[in-house]
Image (cartoon, rainbow, N blue to C red; front, side):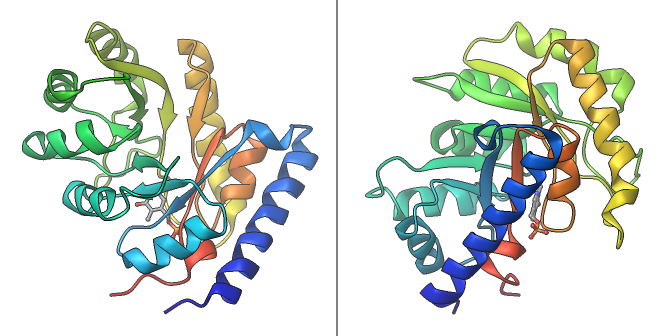
Length: 225
Ligand SMILES: *Cc1c(COP(=O)(O)O)cnc(C)c1O
């Protein structure tokens, strides 16, 4: 398992890269929220990360989110981000455990989340398939405006931004146009937040306006199989 020292070094390195990207972009560091992507990592690793001050954790799978939310119920101030698409039947777990949902793309799921949510509204990002990849989740860019109008009418949800998961590229510069496109779309819709960028490309994402970056491997190492 990842040692406390290794994690400490990883967190410091990612922090330095975020700060440098903010500096290049002329942005204040506090305009970017780091979400540690903890999917498939054991609860002990999440506890280590919590001990080092990380408070925003991202999980892809609704049942895993449910279980870890329960296991870490004693950790005050944790904020859970559900970052993967969810089936309608599992939306109840996201509605209960998550503070933020990054992968809104189906009206049926939005309705279920709205119905199940109690307390503070669930902050949502609409996932956009900017590169039009057949294998990827997310709405086509030209479908976002209509979908936003539909989900904005639902109680208990608060759509604040757009999210994308562009193709993996060896050269992060190749992802820049997709990030730029997402930023332009969000602006045209009056949405202030952008969830974009992971281990290979979070610096480019910050330069293009990301307000949340979702970083797993660079912080926690390779995920267990
Ligand atoms: C796994 C995952 C990430 C993190 O990926 P890394 O390459 O490990 O940083 C970010 N966003 C989503 C939606 C993911 O599924």
